[in-house]
Image (cartoon, one colour):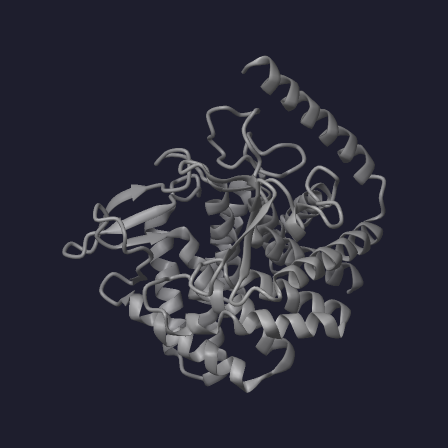
Length: 398
């Protein structure tokens, strides 16, 4: 490490220490109110700035400029979801107006058959909108999007296909795909048709069998041989190495199996969620402030980048797990999540008002091996952070 890099590293470490000491003296209810208020201000700034840009949805903020996307990007549904959650929390008409506006920009995604990410795109946007407003038109969009998603289902393999772009992989499935299963379970709840949940369970069961190592860390990508019906490759795309534990991948797995237990009440999924949670929370490379390095096996730890998005997803999942798990571990899950929320609500990660392009959190890591979206805000980090904040607030109120 050169002199400049060393200086920057120790300066950040010093700020994190100060922030950590300060945040632990702030009452949790006060911290939540402060952070939610900041999030509201940032979301309004973002919504106002992009309102006149037809079809634009926020993705990240780099080099002083906001990067936007259209409906067909996997992150398109997160900002509408943030707006819906903030409307539910505040009941401010401005949030309702913007939630409707930005949700409508995602609608064409319902016809996409080239992506596995329709759960992210449609359930985070239209799903939250339907839950809050009971708008029948929103349900129709989710319904059509679900049918599009199911075109990627392979009943012989028992999984839904993720990507189409790598010829090395015959039938690739990424751990992220667990996050799209909630939309299928939702469709069974709404229609009474068991087929949607059955497919979700088969995908989840196949993923348990093939994605996880003996220590319950997960591979990022598992590709299936379409003739033998067995995995022929276990790789990474966004992690450090095929054998490493990419932090956001571990977060997707934790969130996905916690959600599957909530939606099905099957103990297999609770047990899997517990095991993943134990891997994360007891890992020697998880820092004391509980925001993970971008990969648990990154070669330059402790000088490696942290990933706020992984921390936010983990916090939201651990809070839900703490409410579903009746074992003695529940308190640990909750305490780790609270520590993550305290850290993300500190000056080290929480953006100042009117800065950070309107995004709420700083220091996300998108695709390190591809050198894209490195140490920047990420729209999905904001989404799961808001969800975690509101989940914790509800727990404290109950």
